Amino acid sequence: MALIDLANPTRFVTLVERVLPWLVAATSVAFAWGLWGTYLAPDDYQQGATVKIMFIHVPNAWLSMFVWGVMSVAALGTLVWRHPLADVAAKCAAPIGAAFTFLALVTGSLWGRPMWGTYWVWDARLTSVLVLFIMYLAVMALWRTVDDPTRAGRAAAVLTLVGAINLPIIKFSVDWWNTLHQPASVFRIGGSTIDRSMLIPLIAMALAFTLLFITLHLAAMRNEILRRRVRTLMLTRAERAA
Amino acid sequence: MMALTALFARDARIAVRIGGGAMMGVLFFLAVVTLVPFAVGPDLALLRRIGPAILWLGALLSSLLALDRLFANDHEDGSLDIILMARPPLELVIITKALAHWVTTGLPLVVASPILGLFLNLEPTALAATVLTLLVGTPALTFIGVVGAALATALRRGGLLLPVLVLPLTVPVLIFGVAATNAAVVGPVPFGTPFTILCALTLMSGVVGPFAAAATLRYGIE
Image (cartoon, rainbow over all chains, first blue to last red; front, side, top):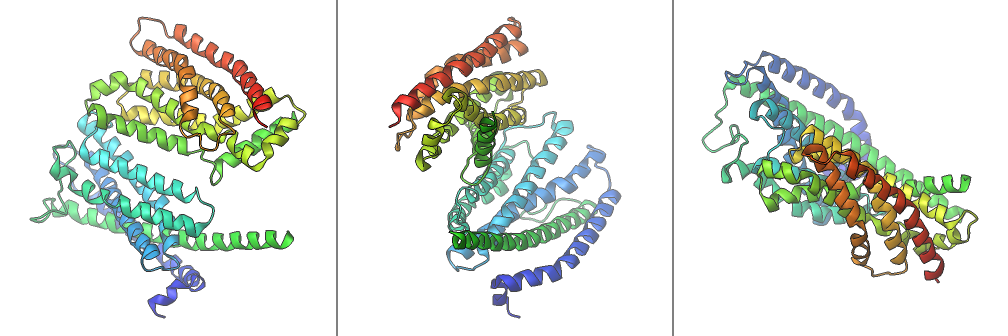
């Protein structure tokens, strides 16, 4: 079955229903491995055990940007390649990405209270992630403003692509501006500066959260396809009754 | 009574559905609060001092923006005419619609305000005072806004006319709301003094607003 066959909603739903239990199992295993690695990871010499918030905060932050990237690719699929399921992918990714961003903000805020002495500070990294969160909510709001899903999809696709400018700003904000947030330690020119005993659990948790996103996203896409079918059926029945 | 309950449920249901715009107010509130530190700078001490004022201004502007959907949608599809001819008194009908509007637009603002207050580095006393004053003051904003919404019902390209009409009337609510919050934090005036005046403003607008709006709808809509 070629990749193009996935454009058929029915085949896509069938495939998702077959693959989903395996994905759930894989996600659970990945989380178990990641959390075990978190438990084994050493305490920070300054922060103590509080540093372990990092193993939840950082993957959520990475995924909040990654999901917007997924939405941007889906937006290109809607506008450029006219893929039938692209707007379904974009619509379903938005709430999940918003949840990851929210968790990144909340865990970072709780981490900042003991470390920096404040829940919130208006520095470049935190502000740009907050702006990303607002843009996620804006895309979700735009989806719920127009009745017809196809038209809503095109409008949301434009907004998603325009908002993608925020991603490099978030990534490089800690380098461009003098901020309270820690500068890049993993993805930077010159290699990562984080010790391997912490890097491995971090990558493991990132993998686990990515698998979680894939699982939730595919399940949500299946639900959205079924929801649109129900909507079409209800509209047809209403038309027939008139 | 059953008609009014049904009207309340209908308005609430439409507001939270697609095109209703219920949660848009909270999103705008969040956006405004995010914009302020860009404008005044990230100095947390300054933000703590002007925090209650920012929250009140954001809530006021968000309430104003959502007002035009009070009567405009009903006027467009004709249900406003039916409401005007119905048996319950028009004033009661307008109070019901205003309450449904407040529950779907104003109450989410009140719930969101402590979280946004954390962004502005407010201390717990200020957070609690802001929530309480907003809880009491946002119905006043809705009841005063009902007058402007009724005036602007028939206008198709009203634009910003509605906020411009309503803003001067909401100034007392804003003054006493911020005064009550600052009284709770800094003093020297006791919290109760401006707070009871705020309550009085809400109760007064709850009577005057619907009566004025009813007069407008009765004689202004052809």
